Image (cartoon, rainbow, N blue to C red; front, side, top):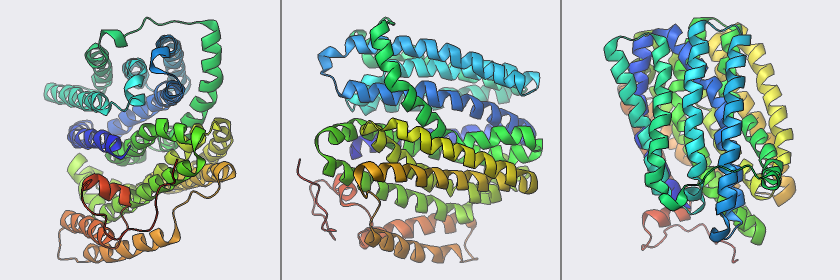
Length: 479
């Protein structure tokens, strides 16, 4: 699981680097207001993708993990049939919302173009679900990098052409077509299926899929919902600042989702056969989430403003303060993604609907209260508060099913000690901002490794044949 996650994360890092170049071209070419419109449309489309792609994929991988490989073919055909139907309905609803919200014509047409593209990718991902179950992460990593390469190529071509806003949305359609074309190369002839809509199979799938999809869409739209709300209640400039910040951290948000998706088949098996092992895995994943969240927060403390100016130019400098606030949400996003798949593995997805529904209500209240007064900074604070609320609610429901799965106090003390040392470079004014931020991150990881903050499984994956120094005395439960 660790190595599978590492492979997907490596692809995501490559995608992140390509995405930063893409974001730089976009933000500098479109400017603050058009960038806000672009990110608003993609965030709206991202809400639909949370259902059609992420939500249904989690259900599909969970169901396939329970079946013998020889019995999977009919289920895969019905998963594809389900995805085709849901994707069409989602696209119609997206365009209807854009019209009802009174968006300008370029945003409505952009919703149709971008929506069609990302939903094509969602259909392709339905065929690629067996790769997730079989932990064949190389093919999935290839698709992630391919999407980033095609997006960057399209953006670069349009910037060179001097295009206005609308053609940039069509890039998502090109990405969808390229991904669809690559599917046969990844799954082979025997991995392709004609879509089916068997009534009995679809009824069973929908009984399982709808609660999961509903839960996950609620759990993944908080940061997207805020910018959609801002497009309705705030100025184009403030929406643009928030959109620039969101664009800067968007690739990082994908990482905990990837880790959770890679972990789901194994957590499902543990939930079925060995509850202590499930608790052990959830605690370890939670430790990784805390380390990653603190690491990003430390780096962003000094790097936020220069990063935003690097991406969008001096006019995006005010978005640095927005990013400095917004990035704190990553810690809570990582934790609730892990706890979410824990509940799904236990078959408790209906519990997620309650927790995420309350969280969604909370983030809406936070945004309505904070955005009119504080603009983009208020939107960032609303995102953080909403994610903290939903993480607390999901953990509350998970604790009822498994008992304590939070990280231990001794681990948190190690993290705190490493973070305290890592703060020192951040206050050295003689250092350039990016150098201070990078040094802080390096110090945090180095000190953390020395004092045993890094989980032993991660150390083992780095040095699989070497000793594990500073063992914490935690052994995986015997299955």
